[in-house]
Amino acid sequence: EVQLVESGGGLVKPGGSLRLSCAGSGFTFSHAWMTWVRQAPGKGLEWLGRIKSKIDGGTVDYAAPAKGRFSISRDDSKNTVYMQMNSLKTEDTALYYCITVSLEGALENWGQGTLVTVSS
Amino acid sequence: QSVLTQPPSVSGAPGQSVTISCTGSSSNIGANYNVHWYQQVPGTAPKLLIYSDTNRPLGVPDRISGSKSGTSASLAFTGLQAEDEADYYCQSFDASLNSWVFGGGTKLTVL
Image (cartoon, rainbow over all chains, first blue to last red; front, side, top):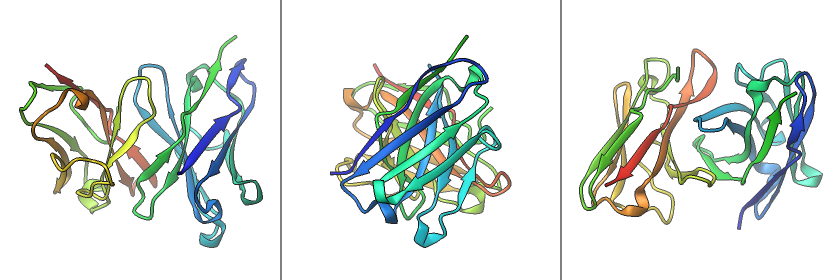
């Protein structure tokens, strides 16, 4: 069974940083493309970025809200993907999901999310 | 303002049929990029419901279907059931933004 467990969320002041982690199991992590999506309270889904598998180049693409502030990386030896978030703003307050990407580009398996609250 | 436009809400009585639309443009759905649909029951993580326009993952009943034409896609329910009450999101790729994009979501209420 595919499992994704996010961690690293919490309360942070505006301008602060957080690093989210997502540990995967039940699938060949090194072959998987991974992505992050967030959902602000009471709002819809917002795509943040995606990292390809190393065999596919390992490149990372970001959505506009994440460019320049967020950085996605992976450690296949730990079956973990990370998202470093810097210069956090109150509007970054959201539940952050880690997801596997299918060959067709669908967001196939979702974690339960980790909550990030940016507030003074 | 979402790149993909969905109605905020739809509703139907048990047993009825309802459709949720997802309208894009020539840089996403109209460019023939795959459309995927997700179901989110309140308080839970989204779940993949339809992938690549029309395909159902294992476990999704065949009374739920997806279609695509031109710059729009649709998610259809026949024989509506109480368990279908949830939020639904469409997703595709936008070439002009070089980004995956979501619709704003549609709340389906089973009356």
